[in-house]
Amino acid sequence: MRHVSSIAAAVAVAAASSLMVQPAAAQAKPPSAATSPAPDVKAFDQRTAEFQEKVKLMQQQMDSLRQTQDPQQRQKLLEEHWATMQSAMSLMHGMWGPGMMGGRGMMGGPGMMGWGGMRGYYSRLTPEQEKQRQYMVDQYTWMQQMMMDHMLQRQQWLTQPAPASSPQPASK
Image (cartoon, rainbow, N blue to C red; front, top):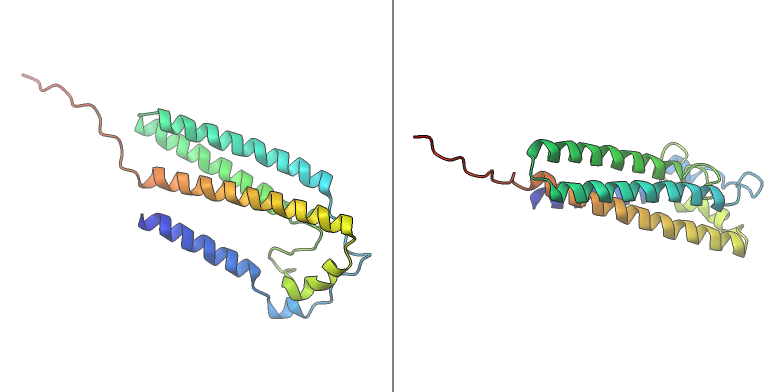
């Protein structure tokens, strides 16, 4: 249980740190309407579909994990699940690129602007762009929840004791 709470704390810290405003970035000029592309919903939906395929694969891996009693097979499935999770996370990170979610580097990195730098961006969105952006944020929130669910499931498997093997008959 200690491991699960450690993961939850790490996720909370990561989420909080992504919301912090970096002083240098906060002083950056807000993007103008000409340099701020509208959200690209079509590209976002393509990546969302790719992400959904990864979620299906992760779920199949978890289902297989529940069905196996072989410790080596279980380890192999956990490794495959981890690789799929990493791939899904990479896909999610790519969604925050220019034009995908409507800003430049809003989720971190050297271009992180925080709310102070994004206020002008949001005030220039048309009502249709606002709806598109909200749709994309809602979908992204769902993706984050799926990743958290799978991280917790994986953590349970890692901390769970190995199944007791059937007793061997005593030799005479």
